[in-house]
Amino acid sequence: MLCNRCHQREATVFLTKIVNGEKSQYHLCEVCAKEQGEIFSQAAQGFHFNNLLSGLLNMESSPVAAPSTTALRCDSCGMTYQQFTQIGRFGCPECYHNFAARLEPLLRRIQSSSEHTGKVPLRCGEQVKLKQQLETLRRDLKQAVMLEQFEEAARLRDEIRDLEQRMDATERQG
Amino acid sequence: MSLGNFLENAMSRWMRDGGPEDDIILTSRIRIARNLQDKPFPTLLTDSISDEVLESTKTALASEKMKSLGDFQFLRMADMAPLDRQALVEKHLISRELAEDSKHSAVAIREDEMVSIMVNEEDHLRIQCIMPGFRLDEAWDLASHIDDALEHTVSYAFDNRLGYLTACPTNVGTGLRASVMMHLPGLVLSGQINRMLTAVSQVGLAVRGMYGEGSDSAGNLFQVSNQVTLGESEREIIENLRGVVQQLIDHERSARRMLLEQNRTALEDRVCRSFGVLAYARQIDSREALERCSDVRLGIDLGMISGVSTGILKELMVMVQPAFLQKYYREELSPGERDVRRAALIRERLRLDDTEVR
Image (cartoon, rainbow over all chains, first blue to last red; front, side, top):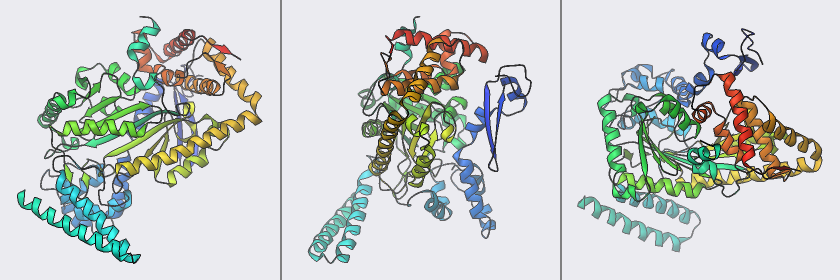
């Protein structure tokens, strides 16, 4: 198939453009594709989830809190919240703490919750593991009370007390 | 070098071997994102810090723990020719982003190419395991072992509440992306694919065509993966994905059965024509090659063609890509020349098998 534009060279770039729901297809040769500045393969791959994310962030930050967001800055790496909303990526691990207040609604939107329940690093892990265990036990306890399974609830309560004592002990050691 | 020898050397394990449900599932892939403590993410990386990250990773790789998990080769992108980087992208061992931002980045690849660890991509470390067939649990176990072994030497950025901290908040928590590459010609031919894709995205999973958008995906290849990384444990994420994929497998199987019952002749015609094109064409572009390979693979699965190895789709899916083609022929090829050489390579590959069309 020949290029739609120069009608001379073999078309090797096939592009489907969807603009406002209207679909149009182009068959171009590499030369014309480059000239048109539409190196689609790269342009398309360059489009990152982050672009969508920054759309989401900007939408959210526009109405009320604009002045405070411009001032918000991570004191560890220097990235501003404004910059984050533009690139959709943080500058350093500390950004999560420094932008915590603004992050919460975002995480609720893009994630299923804001509590990690998965794997924990081996080394810093002991305390975190106990904490996760505690969370699970407390949830179970609530459920047991709700279902009026009081024997089970009493057992869980004792287990929670044990665990809390163990956590206190390790904390003092650390 | 003969094609047989070249393939022997150039193919990853995932391209060569089979696995559970591999008539529909080509590969299972696990990727986990990790960052080193107290260092800015690659977003803000300077030359000196990126070197520190590379050095820390090298040290971690050299540890006894890591050595017990296999031989890794450490490759800095800056030291590699663009064509070699591109070939790694085509083999799915590194991401396009890693190959493009080559100044600071590197990859460690295990000998069997089932494990690759990207350094200074969007996150400091991205551990990837790719296995043939439907083996998400196995891939996760391996990735998790590598993760533990690395952590013996380096400390990760971790928050008690938010989990593993990543550059992009879409990865925070587990840092896990589990994905499965599926061959779904039955659903595409029977016109059910769009309905399936919509349903899958409604249960919180992402689907995309491997080579193209939505239902236009060349070669009927689709990738299904989890989107949420925080709030569910790794096992829950994988279990959820597995459940949905299992249903897709069942639907694909029944679509194939239905096509066979209702349109046998049309289906056989399609499969055999495609086989004819692959066996005799003198020039072919990569899109057509993928589509024809998909038909032939379907024909193999349905018992219409015998003798062609079932791995043909996976193998050619990588082999017909530009960088691989040029590596095999060891010269730079213009797009027009590529189509000619691609056709020649496919003919040669089919001759390696003892094919019979019924």
